[in-house]
Image (cartoon, rainbow, N blue to C red; front, side, top):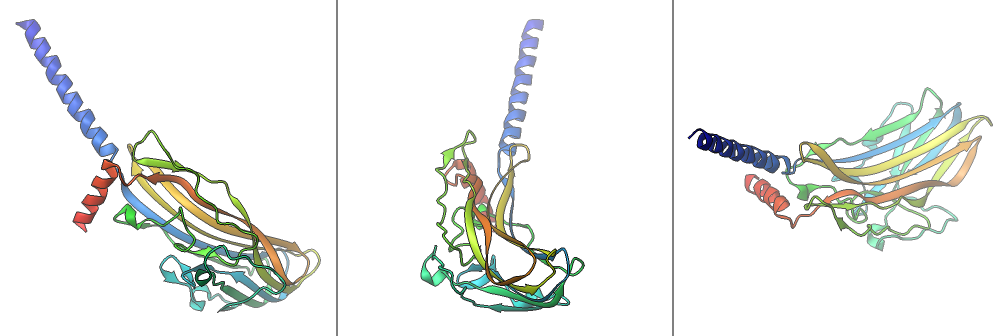
Length: 273
């Protein structure tokens, strides 16, 4: 009798443990807490005072307009004391610009920044964008194919749109892994200023998009794209210049929306919405 009770007790404990493990596994492996972010930054700095400054910096463009995600960039976006700003279309003189995307999408817009002086204490720095929660992963930023879907810098010189690496199924059945190397790029900018020979000027700009979510006991997963360029110079500069940079797409992990787990998440969010 005592032996039978011990067996029943062990059996009951094993069932309870199995139920707890099953419940934990189910809740742990359910993706959630979806977030997306689009961030844009421009930074113009100088180690010494430079004067009579005029700079054209390419703006991120999508659907033929200067855009950050769904928001159009306007001159008011860039207002800053001691600087004048305009948004213009410009054609770099003497440079052969290739067209990495269809003509209707290949509009280039520039932020024209003018100032009497830029110094170590009076730099031009703007950063826009914040992470936001999204209800469904269908609302994620399109990081695999940004051209034509997200904001990118135009124009580009000697540039070919990167193709995402072959996607391979990871051990987590509803997660794809993909990573591409950074693709070098050249971006035309216009820079005009007077300066002492020791003045070191840097112009940097970046547009990026990323998505994140939680699964597996709050382990974070995500993916991103990034488009950036940088130009440095010592002394004066006059006219069109070439900034070097990199473009990276399809970096990170991607949901397999056909899997039962992701389908359940999408269905639940659709029903709740």
